[in-house]
Image (tube, rainbow, N blue to C red):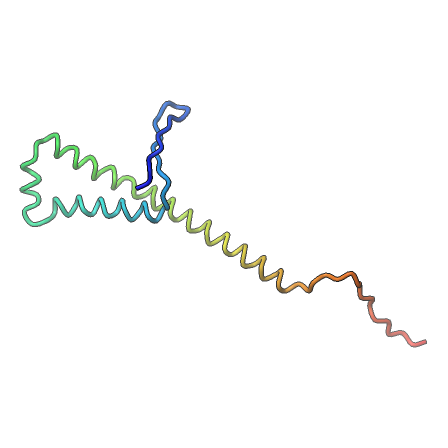
Amino acid sequence: MKPLQITVNAQGHTVISHSTSISEHCKSRARLLSSLVNMVAAPGGFEHFSAFPDEMKRDILSLMHSIAEEQSPIIDALEQHTAQAYYERGVNAASEHYRQKEPPETGDVQQPADYTQR
């Protein structure tokens, strides 16, 4: 994992970020949530989970909740990133198409044909 960057915004809130691709971040968060859910949902897992101290159970459930709550904004960011990337690819493809379609400019300007009889 890349190093975290922690800053404080104008409202005095901490902003924690690390430079990673959106798809890599989505995959790692989904794996983490899946692992936590599997830990509790596995055969005998709930009984094992119930034996944890109350504070530890609250922390694990809080972590699961925060990861689940993070999914909608992550999906929105991924959709926006994907749409922007495809838009930019389309613009680049269209401009390349028009560049290839236009004849190269030369210094000679062709005069229209004169079809009048003399």
